[in-house]
Every structure is written in structure tokens, then in C-alpha cells.
Image (tube, each protein chain N blue to C red):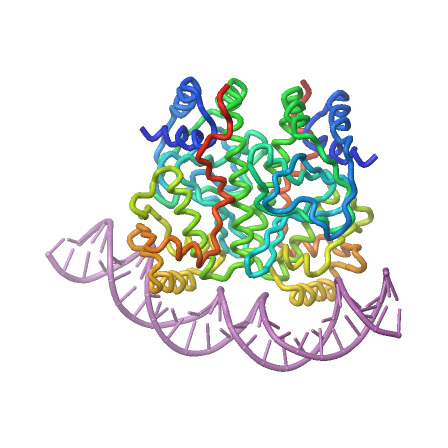
Length: 244
Length: 244
DNA sequence: CGACGCATTGATTGGATTCAACTAAGGTGG
DNA sequence: CCACCTTAGTTGAATCCAATCAATGCGTCG
């Protein structure tokens, strides 16, 4: 049951009751598939629904007049595409599927209701946007003050950590559907330079990456190369929001 | 009355009642000054209070092991430093005063109470963090896919728009207490290159910048140079949250 | 098969960094 | 009140990381 992705995610921080879990499963009734490379939401749209990624990878991106694209976030199962449109008028960026995706279309009134009914759920959602903000800050630092080698290493560490958090890493291997161009658009590099950098990471025995499967061969080494400190992901063992 | 900065800011989006305004003014009782260049909050801290900038400029920043610093946000009057620490355990970055600042130390329980008592205030705070997220996304794009010239122009446009929003621009002039090094740390450049770029913007008659006063001599021209589109700031004329 | 998308490699260019020196402005203390 | 010191801004020259341009390999899918 793919719906459980959200629940598993929120349970990382919030101690959800069975009622909460039922409610969450309930609002994910409208589930649709989206093929790779297609926009889930386009810039300028005023989405009628909230979108939640249940399966596959997507990316938040912006395209500049000159044609350059910058990816500002990767979305993996359990991530909301647009928790903000209830409050803000229109999308100031697009969301594209990077792999075939399964997306839940949630009535935004359902979210409103849910957050009123359960303060635990409200807290959990609030928490998730704050983590998103922390990730964004880290991307600014990463793309701003690290060189290509550290940058690629860092984003691989991040995605490894995030995928692990939702149980999608087995044996230090994970699904990484990105093309080198997409990885370049996320790290503010060119695909050519991304290619050379990946080769270096491979040559140094840190990773293995082929046909969209990333194997971390030396996690400590990769983290060292990246200067990776997972604090910003706010990975918790224990839920923040206790019972009641 | 500097406390009114917050109220004016929140009224941009929310149609606050007089009671709301009184409540907001009430929680800003503990006001302190902070000299320039001093940390308001340091990385790793677990702040006991929420901090709100009432006067002056501050910056969110991260320092890498090598010593490189990246500023990830500028904070101006009405901005919260740490709306997240109620939810997250510790600061994953520091906040430094860029000019002499006046900061309100707000009991986080007061915020909790306030957001429960007034859904308008809750909405307004929620909105403000979503705008922050939008600004952060724009910084990733700006520092990632624009060259130095566009980048500096863009950040000047942004700060002009934000200062204008809170009534701190008169005659296209605004207080800009940044050193060139701080501007460089925000745009992921070096202070040397920032210097040359500023000179170009001056030479082209777009701006005038001396002794911490920025004059926009050609707003349209600067925005064109930057590729600036203010949508992401979600500047509203009409409040989003209607009465009741 | 041919075509297209993606990965790879080489050669060259260029924007920004680095290193270094120097000026200007402001504050401090003898 | 001026010598001194510090901090910020400015300029020049050399260097470098990553971009650009261009060609090729390679797999897969219609």
C-alpha cells in the first residue's frame, strides 16, 4: 500500500494515533500516475489539489529566460509538492516527474480539516515544511560554497540519507533515476562537468552508479569528501510530538 | 514604536483585528539591542526565546570547515530569526547582526498561545514562512544559474522590494548596511569580484551605493539586468485572510 | 536498422578566484 | 590634534575551476 509512505514519514516525528493514520490514509483516495519527464504542476498554475508523491522521484525547478534550468528540490515518496498553495496564490515554479510517479491528489479542504482535528498531524506537517526549509538552506550553502566534487558528493549523501529515512535503501543501494543533466541542474553545474566529477567519485571507489542505481561503496569516505553533516535533515529516532 | 513593524508586516497578508494587534504588541515586551557583527543566535544553540528583528539588518549564515561563509538569508524588520525552534531541536545555522539591531525576545509559549487564539495570526505566520521558503528557492536559482552581474543586481532588487514592502524605501533610497564581503557571502562570490561588479552597476548608471545607502537610479534597468520577477515575494495589496 | 537520448572524451575558453598591494575612511589614544 | 591602527574598498596580474564547443560511443526502442 503506497499510501503508507506518508504515514511512515510523518511517524518519524509525530506519534500518530490509529485514528490519525486512518484519516491520513483516507485523504489519499485520488491517486494518479504520471510518466517520467512530465510536469506534475507547471509554473503559474493555481492547483486545485495538493499533490503528494507516493512513488517515484520528482523535482521542483525554475527555468530562466535564457533557458537555464535550476532544480531547487528533489521530491521523493512522502513529499508534498505544494503544501503552500492553500496560502499562496500561484506556483512560482514547476514540478516535474523525474521517474514514473504515483501522485495523490488531495483536496486542500481535507488538509485544512485534518490539521484542525489533529494537532499532531498539524505539527507533523509544519515540521516537514521546516525541514524542507533547512534542506533549501543547505542547498544554497552547497551550491554556493562547495566545489563540484564536494557538491555532487554532498547531494548523493543527502539523497542517501533521505531515502534511508523512508526505508528505500537496502544494502547501501538506492534507486536514483536522475540523468546527469538533472543532477547538473540541481548542483548548478553542466552535465559535462557532472560526468567528469562522477567518474572521479567512481575512480576513488566511493560510489558506483549505473542504470539508475546508486551504490554507496564507502559511506564514510563519501561523507568526508562532501563535508556532510546530516543535522539539517533533523532525522529523529524518537517522535517530537508525544502522545495526546 | 518599533513593535509595529511586525504588525505592519502581518497586515500585508492578514486582516488583523484590533485585539490581534494588541496581542502582537503585547508579546514584544522584552526588547534588546544587539551591536553590529555580533551573533544574535549561534549555530548549535537551543534558543529559549523566539527572536524577531524590530530594527536593523541581520543575516542567517553557515560556515564551512574550510572557513568559507555562506549567507542564506537577510533579515530585516519584521522577520523572525527562528520560527522553527519550537519544532526543531537546535539551530543548524547562526544569525548575526549586520547593523546595530533591536530584537524582540518572545516567549515561545506566547506564540503557541497566540496561534491558537487567533487563526488569522496563525495563518499570517504560516504565510510568512512560506514566503521565506520562496525566497530561499530564488536564492538557489540566483546563485546557481545567474552570473555575478545578474546576481548582484537581483539581490539588490530583492532587498529594494522587501524594504519597500515594510515602508523603508523613500525616494528609491534605502539603508543597506552590508559590506561588500557580506554581499559576496550572500551571492557566493568573493568580495573582490563583488567590488568589480558593483562598479559596473554604478558605471552603467543603475545604482549608487555609498556609506551604506543604496540609491536605485534606474529601477527598470536594474530589474532588467537582474531578470527580476517579484512574484516569488508574494507581495499583496489585499490581505489574503479576510475578516472573521 | 536508424534515430534518439544519454554518457563520455578532448580541446579550448572564460568568468571568477586568488594573491597581493595600495588607498580611503574612521576611530583611538598619546 | 595628529600619529597610528583598523576596517572597508579598490586595483592589477596570474591562475584555475568549470563552461563551452564539438565529436564520438553506446544502448534501446520504435
